[in-house]
Image (cartoon, rainbow, N blue to C red; front, side):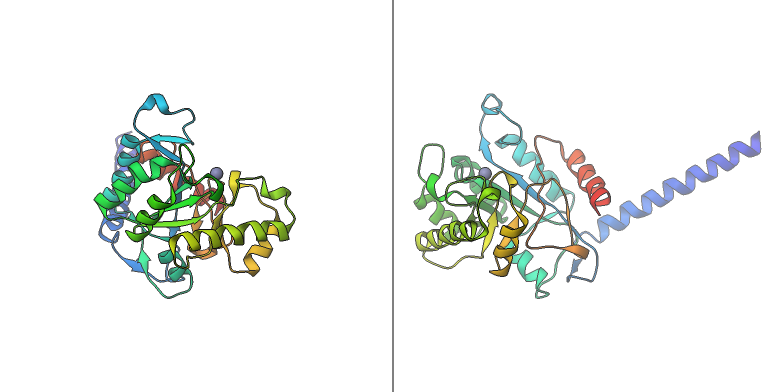
Length: 268
Ligand SMILES: [Zn+2]
């Protein structure tokens, strides 16, 4: 009996030591940077919609996030060694031109809501971190959405990437590939005209709806595409024409981290 206990204690000690070593290794290598193919990096992309002041304004946890929750989530990630990166960083990394931190992640906002300018942009300036906003051209400047002046201000800060979320937020999986391409190209052109310079061709599907044929055509034109499927990008099979994004919802940071790790294994 005594021997049995000793063995269990020994196994327990070894397991604790292994966990401790992994934990310490993770902390001391958090700032290490890698080129693509050097190491299989998990690159989560967060998708938010609107940021609001009060919890009463939250109708759906995937559509509205309170400023308090948003700050807690991003600060928590940064405190754990995660570094927010931009789509330019990700593109350069995918092209083998740039190294990124072991724990990189992206922060994106769909639809172009007023809260992006009011809260997320404010926070991005405070922390000096990049964020990305996908706007709907027909909604810019209408009630509840930021206007072109605000878009230009965010763009000039070099902290906010302004990208396309289509002209009118339709169900584009029902469009013919050519119609989808026309809509996307017009949307990108309109953003470029308003900002006064060319932008990365990055597109996000409304409702995450897309067709294989449409996606192939956009890919042939070099248009980077974001999905909304709660999966995690991994550098070993990084697909810039089908980037995965996950909802942080109002989850605490430990839960977000667990979801990242779990989904990375589940969807490999
Ligand atoms: Zn949308």
